[in-house]
Structures are given as structure tokens and as C-alpha cells.
Length: 318
Image 1: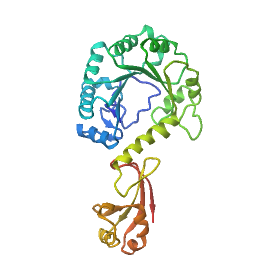
Image 2: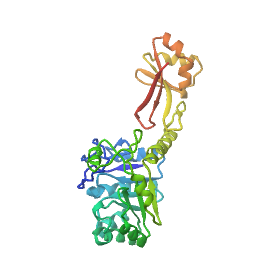
Image 3: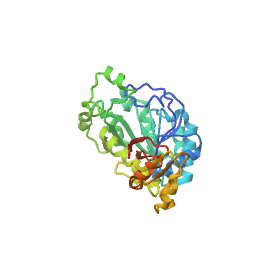
Image 4: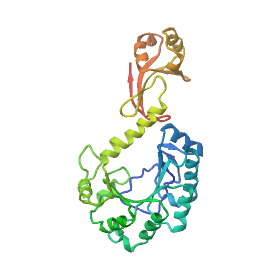
């Protein structure tokens, strides 16, 4: 689960992809779900059978008390095996790191500013990374692929047995202007990836180096999360697709149609009655579409994202 704890941040990274909906706003989201109470986080984690949580922002450590509260909340509910990692652009002191470790944090991923990557061993990030490692936290650095001149980062991580995550640089609605001012171009018309970023990542050679492409994030990570949510949330009549969406039939305009479903032998677990519509299996809606339309109903097949009130991807009238 991705736990976005605040959109507030003191940095101004030109490549930041955080959306306008979240950027600069002190709001909390569990995946795409707005969080108004602790139960929202727990429900979202259960809905996708989450094995762990990544805490991100904005800058999470600007809301340290909130972060510690959420770490404890998740550990108390799901146990020590629920792996929690934190992204931060800060270099927290030892006291902050100790409080995070005591709360139950398992891993910390640092995002130092690009201007110090080459000489990170002469910066305050070195102390933070060494201290985190000595406290028993798994330690890594996560940065976009904008230069391969990161020898200082590699030597520091080798010293603490840490890992390096490299992300292919990509365009978003919020960073497009900043990236273009830096001279970056799209890889192609179908991709949000930046031309040349992957090649930079391929030049980096280290012991624990992981590269995440734009395509992998879009096509694999998000889809796998959707598939977990779909598997957990699917009703008896929903069909979960390979893309992690849910497909079902919807009958609008006449609640009397439920009696037609019952007369056709459709079990009560195979339809759900709403205020002005009935949802059922897509194939049931298709089989009964002609009779339902004679009753004045509109019959369609819906494909939507699997979370509560998920985005409708496609609506096909029958």
C-alpha cells in the first residue's frame, strides 16, 4: 500500500511528479483513497491484502508525529511482518531515526538533492545514512536517472551495505514544464519516459543497484496492486480481469427488474440492488437484456477500477 502522508514539501525538485491534487496540500491518501480517519487506512490495506506499506509525500518527516502514529497503527494491526519503508528527502538526526525505528519502521530510502550526489560523503546525508544503518534499518538511496556520475553514492552504500534504486525519469502533468526547461524530451509519443534516462541507468554499475523503468511502474506495479485489490473486493458476480479491473452488468431505471432476475433463477448472491439500479454478472445482464429493455430498463456492461467507487474505464450499452 502507498501511504501518502502529506503534500507539503520544502524542496522544489524540477522533476517532482506529485499531482496538483496533492502537491502543497496537507492531505493523506492510502493508495487513491482519501484518509479522514485511521480506519480508512486499515480498510484500504485489508482491501488489497497488503503485505507492506510505503510511506511517501511531499516530505513525510515534516509530519513526524503523523508518520510515527501510522507506523504504530499498521504494526499493531498487521504485526511485525508488515514491512514498512519510508521515503525522505531529509537527512534526519539520530534522535528522529531512533523514534522511527522504535515505532517499527523497517527501511528508509533517502532522496538527497542532485547537487550533492557526487560529494555525498562530505554532506550531512552521510551521517544520516550511517546512523540509520547502525540502528538496524535497511538503508537505501532512491533517485531518478539524470546522471551516471554518482560514484560517491555507490561508495557510501557499499560501506553500509545499502541499496540504490534508480527510477527512469518521466514526464507528468506537474513536472512537464520543469523538465522541458532542462532540455528533456519524451522518449516517444506513447510513453511518458524521458529520452536518454534509461541509458543513464544502464551505465551505473554497483552491487545492489535496482532500475525501475517507467513502463514497469505503469504496466506491472500498478496492475499488480489493482489485481490484489480486485481479488479481495470482487463480489460473487464480478469478473476480475488480467489488468485488475472488475467487469459486471448494470440495469438502470427500474428496480422491478430484480423480480425478473429472480424469475430467471438468478440467486440473491448474484445481484445487488441500489437506489435506481441493479448490478449483476455481465453475462446475466447480456442474456436478459432484451426482456429488461422491454421493461424500460437500460442495460450495460461496466468495467471499472477495483477500489471502492473506482474509476469507470468503459461502459458498453447492450
